[in-house]
Structure formats: C-alpha cells, structure tokens
Length: 76
Image (cartoon, rainbow, N blue to C red; front, side, top):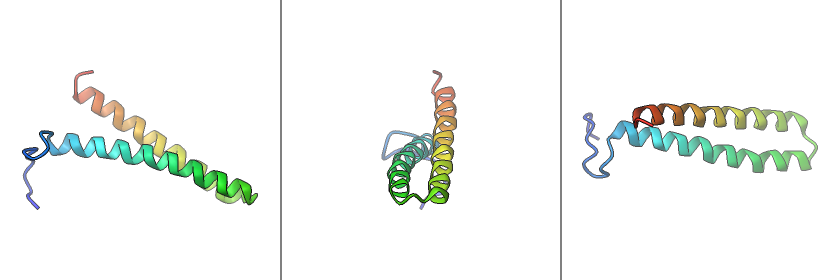
C-alpha cells in the first residue's frame, strides 16, 4: 500500500474517497441498527434497545458531521 495520496485509479483523491466511504458506513450502520432495535423490541429487551438506539444516534451524528465536512471541502 502506498503512503502517498494519488486518486489515479478512482479519479477521486484518497482523502475525499475515505470521507465518502465513512459517511456511507455511518448511514448503513444507522439502517442496520433499526433492524436490531426492532429485533430487541420484539423480545422486550429495553437495555439492548437503548444500546442500539444510542449506536444509531451516534452513526447519524457521524454521517452528519462527515456530510458537513465533505460539503465544505467540495465548496457547497
């Protein structure tokens, strides 16, 4: 793995690509947590529901922070 940022293969600089990937991973995790929350709710396990709701909120926050940063870097 090269230590220099290139973007030659994708046409997107590594730092921008990594930021886009991070946002997608956060949003994907927020969706996944919704399934897990529903599973825990069916089992009436409030502790697990609370844990997954917190994880979902953290994922949403991460996505929002990432989107703000990406927007500022892309000039929008």
